[in-house]
Amino acid sequence: MRISRNSGGRRDKHNEPAHTEKQIEGTLIMLIYSGRHTKAATLFAEARRMLPGVDPFQMDRVANRLASKLKENGIEQ
Image (cartoon, rainbow, N blue to C red; front, side, top):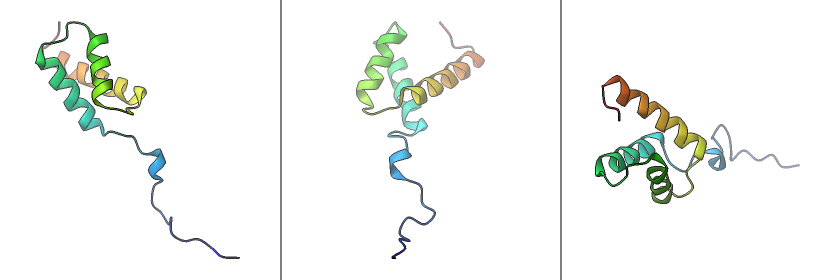
């Protein structure tokens, strides 16, 4: 019987997110400062179009962290 050693300690590519949290945060910031959106729903819809295959749970996590940062710095609606 042959033993396969090609996957060693590498992570499985199928489990990696499609986009990094930095990419998601940058897209959200760009959309916020573009001034085209007055509602969060339309902003997230456009972000999902710009980031195909984004994990909704990852986007929510990044968005909540970004909202907390903005609120800490006195930037809120």
